[in-house]
Amino acid sequence: MNLKTNSGFQVAGVRFQPTGKVYHFSSRENQDLREGDFVLVETVRGRQLGELVFVRPLRQGESKKDLKPVERRATGRDLALRQQWQQKEEEALSAARETAKQLNLPVKIVTAEYTLDGRRLTLLYGSSKKGVNVNTLQRQLQRILVGRVILRRIGPRDQAKLMPGYGPCGEMRCCCRFLSEFKPISIKMAKMQEVSLNPSEITGMCGRLRCCLSYEYEQYCEACKSLPRRKRRVRTPHGEGKVVALLPLKSEVVIRVDDRRVEVPVEDVELI
Image 1: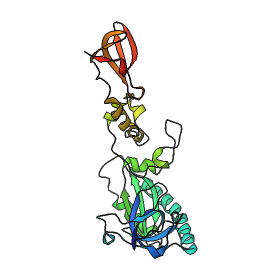
Image 2 (image 1 turned 90 degrees about the vertical axis):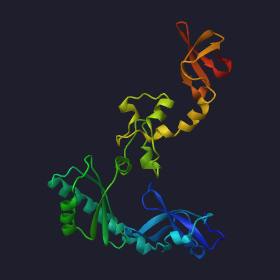
Image 3 (image 1 turned 45 degrees about the horizontal axis):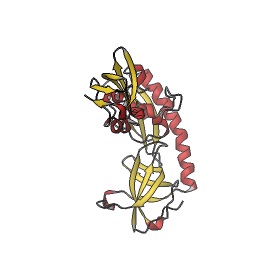
Image 4 (image 1 turned 180 degrees about the horizontal axis):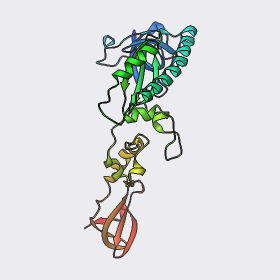
């Protein structure tokens, strides 16, 4: 699909990891870029090769001056060079993990990434302890690895995202498959959906609340607007009682009438 537009400059969305965040760059119309192309761009980490996700016109208020340009579409030579550095990344990752183990550092090196020219190597690591000093590790790695070594700490969600695995649903975890950014998740979302608050049931591999708690939260909020609140006294075809639970997606409420619990459609409930 050709994503060429009529404006002189366009916004190009580029992703450097399969499910990573999409970064914005500017492109000229005559570059004739297409979705799925690999392109060369200059980033804060150096010159990198990324996959083009979209090309769209500049929106109102946007300026190409705030965006770095897409240099060009990647060539076969660029792709071959990238493959060579990816092999080096595996070696660097193994060496970094072994060195961290020898230094007895409480860190987990997750990924290694070289720039296209090999001048800079970024190592992403996670740690359950704050204030871990990685200067010694960096100095030792600088002596044995190619390029300038940069160590960057990432949070538990980002760490889990980079480590493939399955969720409790039996599917590959969402963060590994399609989540490019993380939204704030709160315990309120679990309560609204009446999900068990047992930590083992609402936390993911990252130790944080599961991202999927946000997927249907807005639908639950909207559905609850038409339902009476819990503990409210109501009148139903089964008699008067108290609301003890809500079934938002069924538009029903659970009423305790005497010693019984009955499910009643919201249209059959009358507030007292």
